Image (tube, rainbow, N blue to C red):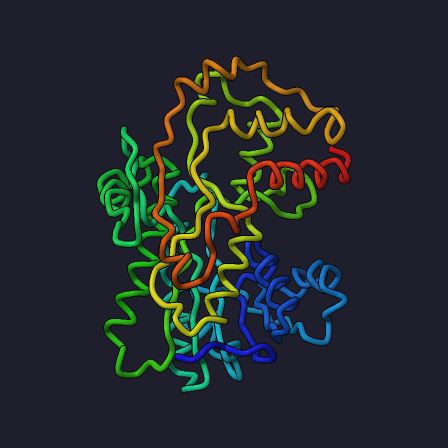
Length: 346
């Protein structure tokens, strides 16, 4: 399908969420009209304030329950592209269904509404995660878009409520994305739009009101790097990361480029926690003098650290034009987070 041009109207689901706010910002700055879904009218007050300079191009509609049949039927009318960002992201679900049901039903419900809406919609972009790509392993593996985290699904099926909470989340992302691609396969004769799934690891920067309101990944960063919640041994472990501004850019590029289609991993690189601590140390005390940092033997941690999660980002290069040098570096991301935290008096 052709690229979706500026001036077109884009639906962003879960508009007041962590990633969605940045997607909306990038879309508005690129000249698009945005219709965002929120769960209640009150949820829109903050968005109207944040985007007051774009208020003539931002429309907010209430979708109180994304798993209800036809929940998005009205929201997709008159839309040229969709950015489906809404999905629960936390690690404290008792019942796996708390995560899996809204993730899967919300995705299928949106795709069903888009299919019924007719030929105007050109592109649907779904926020997936490397949680749907990479499985836990005891040795470094280079994962790519052909990989699926099916072991997480099996573990949840086997253990139910007793499965680790992080595995429940992984299973929800894997099942939701698999359901999306199965939907495309089953309804390809009735669909005119292309599907893109963007798979980022932990995004690491956003605007939030206080540490308790931070999204899961930012709260872990805050507690680990600034409040010394991990031991020195734990600091030699990590994951992969990307700045949320780059995740938002990938979502916009996914509708701007005609060649964008399929699964796309968006990742700045791997990390172990000591690298974030070291980055923060290099910026202090002038930026964030009040925090208590862990005392770390960096040489020891560096020699014993293992970067387990590695991702092939060549599709992001080829389809979105995002190369490794384009990603916001770890030092800049850390600096911007500290400046924001300090401005809030934390």
